[in-house]
Length: 340
Image (cartoon, rainbow, N blue to C red):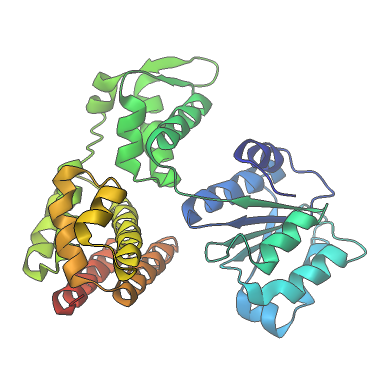
C-alpha cells in the first residue's frame, strides 16, 4: 500500500498485526527515522528491537522472514529494523511478504531507494506492507510540520514562529522536535495545558536561526574558499547551530545546482537557466560562479558525500560535528580544484 503522510502516521501510532513491512524511502532519512521511532513507541517500552544490515540480507535472504516469525525470548513484543535497505534485499522482502506467518513487524529505511524501483513497487502492491516516501519538508510544508509537532507538545505557534523553527531545523525533524520541546518546557505546556508560543518565547530560549552565517558557510564550500571554511563554521558553532541544518542546506544547494547544470549541458546559457529556475536575484552571482566551476559528475559526487556524512551523523558513535566540518572542508577543497 502506498501511504500518505497522514496514513503512515496513523499506521505507526497504532500498528495493525497484519502489517508485516513498513518501508520508508526517499532522501529524508531523519523523517524516516522519526516514523520508525514512533512505531517503536507504539509497540511499548519493552519492545525488543532486532537490527539486520544489508550484508546479512544478501547472505541470508530468509533471515528477515525468520526474524519476523520468531518469538521473543521472554514472550514480549519485538520488531525488526533494517537501516539503509537497498534493491539487493528484494529476495528477502519477497520471502517476508510470502511467509506463512510473521508476528513481528519489519521497519525498513531506504534513503537511496527510488519510487520506481522494485522494492517500493513490491511494498505498494502487497496488502501486508506500507510504503511511504520521505522528503525533506520545505517552505510552507516545513512550517506546517512545525505547527503539527508543536501541537503534540501542547503548543500553539503564533506569528512567524513556525517559519523560524522550520528554518532553524533545516528540515531535520529531530532538531525541530528538540527546539519545540525546549519551548514547551519554558512555557510549561503539555497536551492537557496548551500554551501560545510567540516570537518572544522563541527568543527567550535562545533559538538562533543563523540564516546569514549558514548561507555564508555554504557559499564558502561551493566557491572552494578553503581558507574561509574554518571561520565560517566557527561562527555557526558560536551561535549554537547544529551541522545538520548546514548539511541539509548544502545538499539542497547542490541539488539545485545539478538541475541547472543539466539544462546548461543541454545547451542553455547560465542566464537562461537561472531565469528558468527562478533563482533569487541575490543568489544568482553565487550560482553563476558555481556553474562555471562545477560539472555534473563533480556535483553528483558532492551530493553523495554530503548524504553519506548526514547518515553517519545519525549513528551515536560517530565523530559528530567534527565529521561534518571535515567533510565540508573536503568538498571545498574539491571545489577549489574543480573547473566546469
